[in-house]
Figure 1: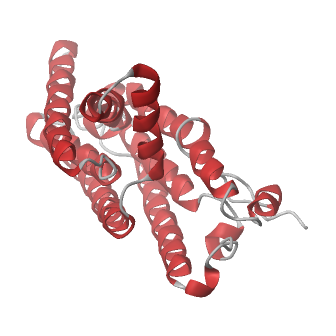
Figure 2: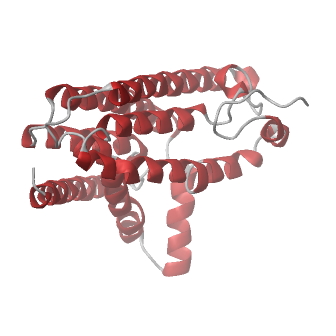
Amino acid sequence: MSLTEIAALLGLNLALIVVVMVGLWTVSLRLKDVSFIDAVWPMGMLLLALATFPRTEGDPIRKWLLLWLVGVWALRLGWHLFRRWRAHGADGRYVDLLGRLERTRGMGFGKAALLAVFLPQAVLAWLTSLPVQLGQVALEPAIGWIGWIGAGLAVIGIGFESIGDAQLTAFRKDPANKGKVLDTGLWRWTRHPNYFGDACVWWGLYLIAAETGPGVWAIAGPLFLTFTLTKWSGIGITEKAIHGTRPGYADYVRRTSAFIPWPPKKA
């Protein structure tokens, strides 16, 4: 594909995800809750991969590999987050965000939800999913050892994230653990195994895409995701909320790696 054709492909994909997010925004107006956006996030990236698939003539093995990996990741994570939303209701992070915009900017729920949640999520999902868009463009070269390493990394990431989520879900279901800190299993080695797994998935997808010329430029996707998880809306916001509800969390932070799995420090 020429640069003009690639630009048109990406532009149409961006328009598609914006339209989808605006449609979901209208749903949030009826629910008075935007928290389901977390479950939509991975499904939006799968949608972009699916929309790209029939419009490109890249290496078939690479295209199918990207599509299957992002599909397994998105369906597993999306269902997990949807069930969490249904079980726990509105997410305090979004309640605080929209409330702050109402107090400081005078925005009503609808305007704040559109401008601060749904439209930004559309652009960020499009950006993060560049590997599964640009990775499908080029026919040559065929997938090589870098791509297969990337596939292995993505599989490890899906497994790591899935196990971490399952351990946390089981921990929360036990009434005896109320107010306690999960520091066993994968959570002994990293405070955020789900975030680390997420990053592995998208760096793996990038390696599959990066064997092609257009795919090299998709590095903006995993870079942005890693920044988001470690410096922006991931670890910082999550841990700020936890510190106030679990007395032992400060000690857990001192001995446990924030992101990359690492042997815990001695107390």
